[in-house]
Image 1 (cartoon, rainbow, N blue to C red):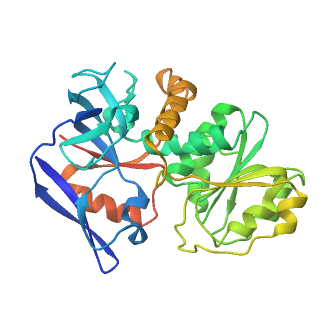
Image 2: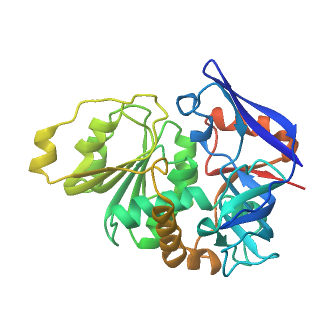
Length: 321
């Protein structure tokens, strides 16, 4: 089968096309015939790679080709999306607990744009962030795939959303899909504006897609008993100062979201929460994934370049014919 592999060498991440055998579904696994996949910035971050090469792609959408032992409730022919191993290929493996049924109304491209971005959004806004109707959410780097997923999820929950971006044009487009207020900036200078927008109170939850360079400013933007979720480190700043006085006097909560060290049981809990709380909104049309651009399979390197140009709003999808 055709596949794209990620190659890391001296801190540089590239893509290499290979023909490899079709994998076999083991116990608890699903073999998926991939129809579309999506790009995730973290997969191309040099910090997460030692020199070497490995199959690329960590999510996919397609038709179940085969199931392994101990798989119940899923059969060949089912439409499935979810976390995958080797999603940049004609066939990919999923653990059965990562499988999410694809609503009939979603195209393959839309289905590929859902899993990781909205699983992360559910973790940050629902499971840990406890965002409620009427509360304020601030998203730094709001035009990213996760940022847009958080915007759409927050609006579904009835929350109000402030987003930051270095592009006024991106903020204008985000307002068309529900952003209440935009702050045009690439720096740590948004807390005062966020407080002004919220009538001086501050925001109830922050999603930090940027990293350590804006972490202290995110704290300054929080209301009493505010929560701060850190998910991205695109600025490469991994350490910063922490204002302990603000932390304890305002009773703030700080948490990170990553799948790196989660167990299979924890990942299954996230998937089950998404299926319960958000999947019905995709099925009835209340949420439609925002796709920035769709590339052909042979264009995957160009899709990577587009992602690294920071021009996107929403997800970048690759379609297999």
